[in-house]
Image 1 (tube, rainbow, N blue to C red):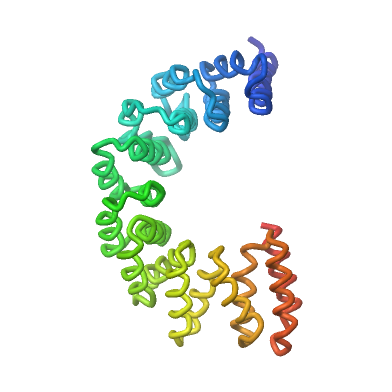
Image 2: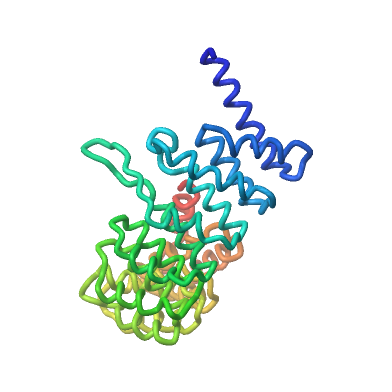
Length: 331
């Protein structure tokens, strides 16, 4: 088949999937999605799987299950980055199937692909998705797999494990999260996810532990604790973070606490930061503006920031606000 014809056929398949995404219950959607799920192209198959999962379309379980054996053969060539396999597992999880077998086949899967200077494992997302599905199904050994994957060489997998444990909220996951926090991790994101998850599954115990990690001589640990408290929806976590900001004297710690409070959606955190904008020193007022600018899409909040800034005459925050907001919007 001439290259131009192959390209035209490929584009037509993607266009059919696009139409199915826009009208998933349309007359030709089921036929087009089944054809795409059986296609040899990882891109076509992964896009179709995403549509099935996003719209929770019934009747595609077998077609989704067929993706794994097809793309596990010569995978670095047929499915680079595990995109089709991960998309299929994600769709099966979104459909809330109660069969653990496809996820057990993936929980320890690794796919080494060539890169400059060696090879890299691209199946981290597959392992995390498999664990998430097993946790959802209350599979008896899910927590054991979580413990195994918490020692994965891929930091994104370790962070994903913590996120999954926090999402499903089983207090029994607490010991693993506590151990990871106390033993440490080279990646701040992993520690932050562990702290967030611990607050979610065992907030009564976790709050005291995470609060104690604030101001740790290990700056990575201290940052993880602050960010976790800032992201928590528990007013007690916000109160603990505000209290710490009021106690510390190092500007570095104050800036960290203010930045963490900016992540919160709780009114108590916003009220405190607006107070800094209104009455704080120029440096702290600017830090509060930058923290609140995370929510630049919230027009009402930004109006409150501007109003508070007009009351702090000595800080001259007007140009700072516009610069920060412009920078956020351009990201």
